[in-house]
View 1 (tube, rainbow, N blue to C red):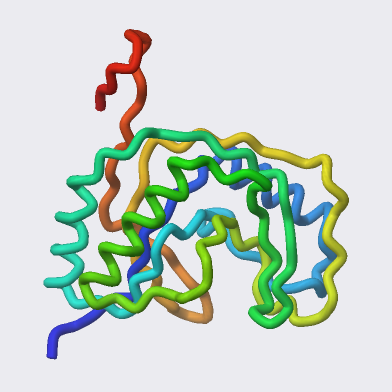
View 2: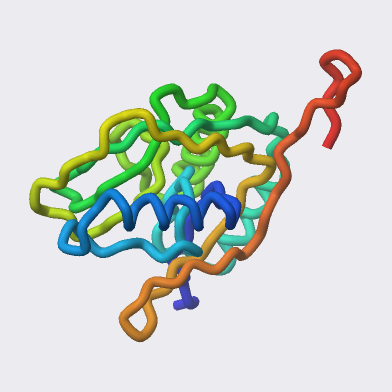
Length: 186
């Protein structure tokens, strides 16, 4: 049997946004609220793939390379707590259409490739804390971080020495609009 890796497609957050979120999280949530996610691991998962063989990984990468999806922006202006999952998250009150389309495309392609996809609706979010199984006070609205996304990536997830590490395997651009009407260019 071939070796497998735990993979997922995601939108990486810019380092400046990662640092801002870590600072905000430290100001808003006490240490006992949950285990903070490392700044470098803050992202928006588009499609979780699970344990994937190298052959299937290459096929999924080939599929992803053919995606021609417009770039989009997202305002991180919502937060919540899923106590059952033990997750405190940051999301958007109004997810852009481009984000929802990209996630749906990746999730449907993953399912066709034999990767289990959750039956729950896609809820774009950044996981801030894990292990948050007790009641957590969510900060009042009024916060927001606008983020422009110009690419998406495939990551592997590995648990080593008591820590989860995400490594980017491949990255693909989203199409940005030119100033000439509705013409699109890469």
